[in-house]
Length: 491
Image 1: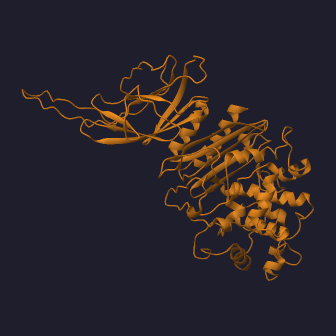
Image 2 (image 1 turned 45 degrees about the vertical axis):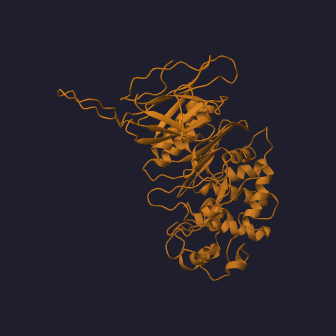
Image 3 (image 1 turned 60 degrees about the horizontal axis):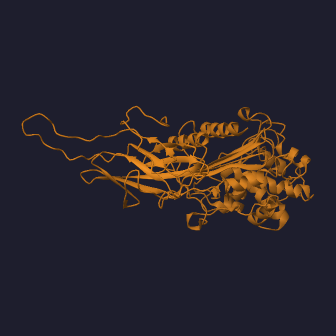
């Protein structure tokens, strides 16, 4: 059987006999950072050096094949820092795997603190398992083995992305012809207790929340309760009662359509939704909108120029509340329930983390819990699982298997690009060259969060959610590429 992974400096490895007549083998090889030492051989009185080698060189899982078919199955594994990511074939029983461990001949190892024997001791890998290698001199090193079922081709791409950009955990769900085709979690939901990600876990969506907000607007549109071209501020405006009439005339000409298309004329300098400076810290959404109306003139005439503007969707959220008489989250739940989605919410801080929600990890000095979720809710505060997102996507994708929640004309309106910018509709990005012309998509980024989803052009849709966000150059392009490559695999 050929090696699945190899590196340039690998200790020779030989496959041990399986404890079973049929074998599930997952080969994982790591870079060698150290080696054992022996006598110096330079004099008549050689000195024996006690080995300090606690390196895990390779790992093999042996298991009875669940199907009893006698087919030999291979798997994929990769080493990231002290975490070993492993994919075993779908259907393999993770609760009973026997690791054959290659370590220094004078070392020993433990599984979750218990003495273990290579090729003999069975372990439950349905959760993260701590494998400790103890060198001859007593020095120990811990490795955490994270095993999941899945497709090695897909998972290899996800693992490499996670390792390169220091992402602790991800969730990926793919649907084809409106049926869930692939759905798995990767890595850690919570590094502190080594809790693994599962596909039903909730992630912050960041700017993917804007599509949820847009669906609320399209529902009100179909019910005849809103006019996209009605002004937002000033006399007769949606928010006239809240913000009065004392503002520049240009602000009074902003329509709901302008906000959904990012053509309000305002630019994100400053960005009142996410900037943590003294002007906005601790301020309510009302206060932030009022500040802009009083102090920030529009750079462009409404409808004349596209400029991505987060606060515009905060304004849309207030319109939803004004029209419905309900708080934003309550109405969101009513709308997504049309797609049988029951686990979509407005997020909170770490203290109010939901039981099935991941923890968010900051990079480059940012604060993953620095944004007030109830303030940014309509622009970036929703939490959901990748599974729920695929269920929702099946109801807004022009499909024929699952009934859409809107009329085709409403979907057309939502996905048609605006007249001044051919790559943005109502709350959705469109016409990305990599995704072909039919796709609609959107990404989301906050400190501690990176997300992207797509309604594919060939019946394949996908959502990728991560609980950290890298600031390494090229991260955003890599995220788009990963989504594209996964979508291509299933088309």
